[in-house]
Image (cartoon, rainbow, N blue to C red; front, side):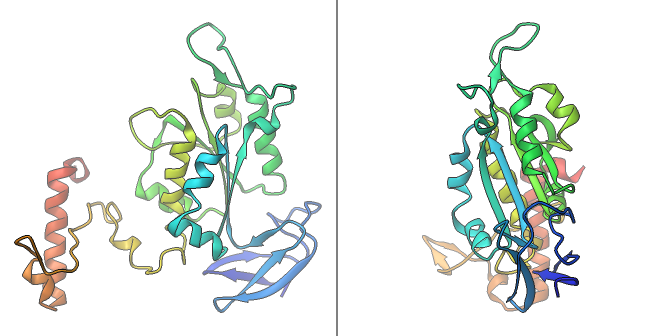
Length: 278
């Protein structure tokens, strides 16, 4: 089995006896255990402490507790417990080499605020990506591509995502030009730091990883999944304060329910997000 293919939640990973993390030797991936999980064989490296096949996410910020707290609850917590994903939040200061662990400096050319230095970010990413040549490095930035459901779906297929969180007046441009593969923004507004944005980004794509949601059809019905906002939802009681659940949803006629939902989805999109219909 070690020289074959390991599979977890339909994600296939080629493992050539003793090689791991992109097939690079000498990275601690040496002792293996083969187990079964949900009917699929999986590989675990005791030396590296990582399940092969789980999506790996590393978040680099100045405030790692922001991500740790938010991503240790609900569905994302269960995904980690099921070992579908591993999420680690790192403090960029740990890679600052001076005794005060300084990670920022005034901008050249003058101006307000401070800019995050290139050195600790480069060294952090290079250490984390050692032995993982396929890692995708993303900078959370208001100047990046606006996050969409399509982009989230793309990242749900990645095996290793490293997220760099900006702060202050941003990061040294050399990080953008020579280290990051992508820049992602969660909207046309500015936050106090990129760790908050990273949490949103991670939640958006982790929930699309196969096996994370209890019902695989849930993601297909999400707003934006089909280019429209999701239709209205109702649950018990049938009537509350004189407001009644639409009769069609109680009819049991699946064809009519699907038709009603499609119409309401279109109406909601026309009202709240007409730009999606252009």
